[in-house]
Length: 332
Ligand SMILES: [Cu+2]
Image: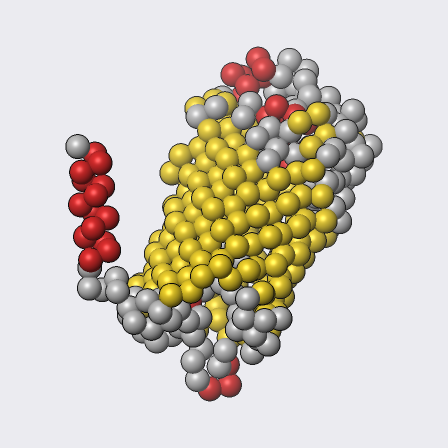
């Protein structure tokens, strides 16, 4: 029965006149770029350059164990050395400044590089707060065009590498900060992804499946969890310059493998290797604006707000509330 429904739905989509589009895929429309939180979504034509700046701010508050919200008292039973729960996290904010550049060396290859600056703050149950800031891991990637069709569809592969430029030795006084407050992974990581894009006259769609694969162990004897991420989005072109988008994202990250010997995992989930990583499904809504004329021609502005639909943390962790991403992009 389910199969029949899917078959009918699929044939409706494929035979729908609005789906067929005789023009090739183009970036020269507001929804020619994915919602701003999606990385490596588009390629460029040979010789083109693009620079971008994104600001992302994420808020977390309240404790969770698995899929359930728990009280400080309940969390204390899992962390007997948390000084009556005083050492448990209460809230965290993560602000990220992301600088990116793209350049197409041919019509088949677009190169990309991204450097992030992180600014984290975690407030504990005793209302003391800890901060860390600095440069994160440098990411470089090659985007390879796999196929393009006249009907506005295309597909590309991303082969990315993350270099361990971010510190994993951030401290608060004499104490090493927890895994989530460190700025990098400390390992060389592969970031592969495959991206599918489709455009019709007024709509665009995209899907991306990617992940982070860590290699080896960092010099603090641990490896952050591998990650898989699946993203689906659709956008509606409202005018030649404005589009609105909706996005579903599923991310699953494993707990930390190994343990930083400087951290006491019995004291706080922030310091516990088994209380890292989560499965999370989010819904995002966003706007893209593309300047088509005048002095700002070629510039783009975008904003997106994301909120979880479902999350399940490993061990005990803070609950993710919402994420805002704002971005500026300029291509020439
Ligand atoms: Cu670009």
